[in-house]
Length: 477
Image 1 (cartoon, helix red, strand yellow):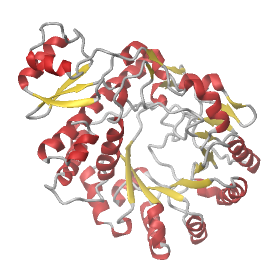
Image 2: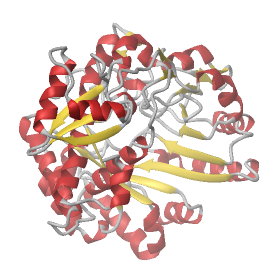
Image 3: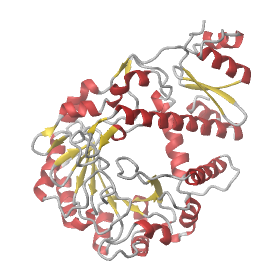
Image 4: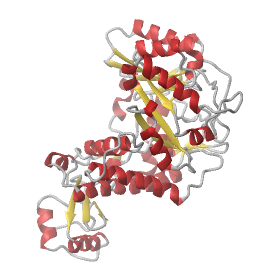
């Protein structure tokens, strides 16, 4: 007998009907009649038919839901923070030689503005010592350098790398650095190469698009050509180091996505580099950006081209800035999530990290924050400092943000696929500094929509290009 409230989600593609069974974590392609029947059952207007009964007998359409919203690692929090730290981000400096219009420190956000502060060696050293003291059960250590523009304090970075290599004996250390790419001189590049440091360089596209937002602070002039010249120098001197370089593109709401893709596919200097992309953040922005419909439709068209390349209808373009997002990030992440086949009695949506244990930022003053994306004027996001260590109670609250919408979470079909970062639930402005129920619920609507679109993408690929059996199994199709 089917439940009056089966935990399922119904959706359609252009020519097919589907049901996502949350308890089975499986997508079924169903007939239109079955789709309509399940739709009626969901609103209590119909009874089951023979086909539904057969599926019920196979274990489908259960009404089982999570009973308690709580992070699975909650009871181990103190042990994790004391023994299993694995990643730290050192805010080497708050100075920057760029003035990017969309930067969170530009004055357009409820956040600190650009400052002329550098991290002192004492704070950097004590931060690395803190990581060492609380990582005895961690085999791998990740150390990141962040700014401002961290390479403005190159000597401090060198000291940190040398010191880390001395103290983290027996552990595998990975270093990474986010840079605007403007001061990658021969000395710096040689050091980065010799120490195998992963770097992310920001390039927003062709010169006219890139220079619109990314200009030098001292003269407001172009930055594009300087960055490309530096990357060309790396390509010439250290071609084997190119695998350690990521390019990040921030898409302006007025940009031409097609022109950006064309640029990356044609610019020889950037060939074969790993490419990431992101949007200008609207979170805590003083005057939020109003995106035009064309912006989203153009992006969807580019993603559609990636689908065509996956199914063999279009030549694959590794330099499409959505190629990695779609074929690697989206497909791989969902593949892993489809492996979960049971709703636990106590659980929490899967997007929430464990601040501190997953990683943490130490700013120039020695204050701890969950990551480099955190608002530094937010007290609720300050999770400790170099003198006091971690604030356990604050971290526990931040790793369980969905407790403020517990009932909604329990009833959400996208529970397993939710990737909401806790920062998306924090209201930071001059009036408020708290976890916001309303803000979180708005993000929940976006997550449900994105999850359904992701399901549709996977099903559409399967419809157009019969997936290999092992891939179909990965996605529970």
